[in-house]
Length: 428
Image (tube, rainbow, N blue to C red; front, top):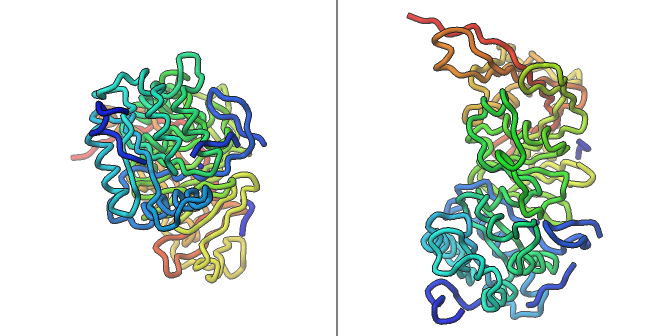
């Protein structure tokens, strides 16, 4: 271990799927302070496949646990309300998600709360007694993908208060139910969420504006944590760092596709296909007089399948299979890697590139790696601004080899980011 959560008009939309109990130190969006929720969060990074039994089954199991807590028969499938609020085509997207949940054993139904293409005005839907009853009687809620701003626009009032529907969702979570979401449904889990970000190079160069590139989320996660999705496959490290620094958030989690985090009582577990990056800015610093974005001493950790992280104590616990393996300690005399090839990338924000550099650092005599981010098309015409990402080992850097799993667990690779000039690309 290392110190390092209607009526006939709606019959085609609503299924038949109790009451929430208002649950110490959490502040839901637009609501009063409540004690720590009894429920769980399942936050998926997007692209969850139907054959990902681990993610779907865990969601259903969490809902079943709550159903039994309420004294309902153990042999009945749990009721999960699907909210396609973020989707352009909510009926088809919602039914597709409900079908996946039914395939794995849930009694899933679609709730017609959506900004676009809905048979019911969303401002009416979030107050409709029948819809509220459907949510209150559920054991879990699942937010689909789409555009996360739509979720907040519908479920929060203009003065940032909870609508009755959002209060019902929070009551379910407080009482012990599960709140889940994928892609856009993951983005709304933190109190600050990405909105319309654009290219990461532009974000590095020009920064962000609150209310434009970012806006409030629903705040199910502790307030000091930020979450981002599609993280490794889309190389979203740059935007996550800019957002976290701008909003003075000390911690963030970037979840990859077909992967999920389960959060309960502040403990996070990685399940599914891949893993998540934990970025820790508690010891980071920036220089206000330097151009563009800059930051020093960010600590990056990679949590693989089965790894756990406590969000209060910051204790990282590798999966049991990895704890059986010898830890990789670069400060140890036994650390004697055979690889001494310099670690360098000209596309640090590419698909899983920065994770690859972190991995290579754990089996290399070089104690640092360099990655660049720049506009390659513009660089064909001459010098362009670029950003250097310098990853390096320090005294607290550790790793655990894959063992029977597929990837390392890595703790505390340090990162500095600075603006540089790329001299240009010339070739014949």
